Image 1 (cartoon, rainbow, N blue to C red):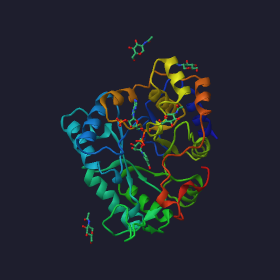
Image 2 (image 1 turned 180 degrees about the vertical axis):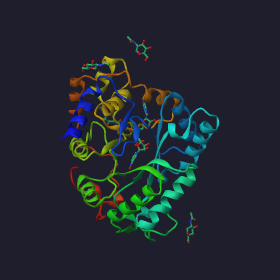
Image 3 (image 1 turned 60 degrees about the vertical axis):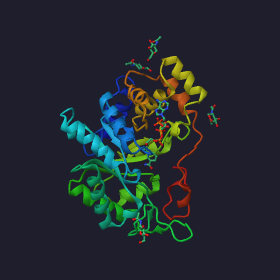
Image 4 (image 1 turned 90 degrees about the vertical axis):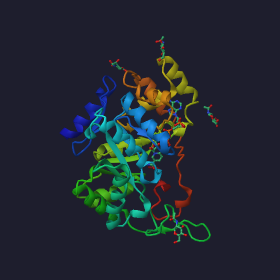
Length: 322
Ligand SMILES: NC(=O)c1ccc[n+]([C@@H]2O[C@H](COP(=O)([O-])OP(=O)(O)OC[C@H]3O[C@@H](n4cnc5c(N)ncnc54)[C@H](OP(=O)(O)O)[C@@H]3O)[C@@H](O)[C@H]2O)c1
Ligand SMILES: *[C@@H]1O[C@H](CO)[C@@H](O)[C@H](O)[C@H]1NC(C)=O
Ligand SMILES: *[C@@H]1O[C@H](CO)[C@@H](O)[C@H](O)[C@H]1NC(C)=O
Ligand SMILES: *[C@@H]1O[C@H](CO)[C@@H](O)[C@H](O)[C@H]1NC(C)=O
Ligand SMILES: *[C@@H]1O[C@H](CO)[C@@H](O)[C@H](O)[C@H]1NC(C)=O
């Protein structure tokens, strides 16, 4: 009861002075705005990370899939060796890929990511999706001769045991989920010795995840909003532009602040220096209750990241509303 009251108070006061971090259920502090890095590799992401750290970002979101862990690791190594920041100043998130879902392979997936990043630990390690793909091939997305994607039926509950193993070993400060629906989270909660601290899901005003947010808050799980700009496709929304103009900010800043003000961690992806700076400049913007309600009303349960190839998988997460 007491902790629920605390959560409610935190949310109510957010609009007045937005803290830069959210405290996870295990006490770790997670910066509320992080840099997304999907579909950017090589020197592009290397420079983006340097620019992001320079303008104040202290949270970088990557994944084994993104093929950019090495480049992000290079950027981190540079700022650490120059003494600009220390390892503990930056919150690094990466994700376990689908071909490492059986319990012993979770450790292997974890070690591959750490090795790529050149780090001893990450701050948060997530199960990228609840469904697994065939293990032991050399392919990221294994396919047969006809191009059909090959599934594995490893239960994500087993995967979670592997996640607890890597947490116990100190390879990650926190563990969590990504793209799990609430029934899948429930199954994890019913068996977990270490409860997931975070669930990272697609979230923007067209898919505002109100129900999943309520569910997660009740279970002390922090949501992270991925594709917060609707992969860039929400930026021309008339209602948002109106609100942005009123506050003399950009539509992107409204979208980022909207999440932070709901107590949701938010990870916009940007590679241009201008966008990177803009996306972190949200701490002085204050959306009113009526702004928030107007933005909420844009919801139309529109999901961009559907993952068509996995629709027939028994653990496909998007067959139920949330
Ligand atoms: N867990 C998962 O399954 C999952 C799935 C998808 C994404 N994610 C994570 O979430 C991150 C963000 O999602 P996302 O990349 O899908 O899309 P997003 O952040 O919603 O949108 C990114 C797009 O918006 C543009 N942009 C950024 N800031 C802008 C600004 N201020 N003004 C105008 N345009 C701006 C970017 O430009 P540039 O082209 O210049 O970069 C890019 O084209 C990913 O990078 C990844 O880290 C996770
Ligand atoms: C933000 O707006 C709320 C009302 O919507 C107000 O109570 C609060 O004082 C404002 N905070 C700042 C820092 O302007
Ligand atoms: C994966 O293995 C196949 C056959 O064993 C081989 O032909 C292919 O070149 C390998 N691909 C990579 C990326 O190593
Ligand atoms: C935004 O642009 C997309 C594609 O360019 C279009 O389909 C959509 O209708 C536009 N939305 C608004 C609100 O103008
Ligand atoms: C609006 O924002 C721009 C850039 O952030 C700034 O240069 C300008 O002075 C602002 N205008 C007002 C009226 O605050």
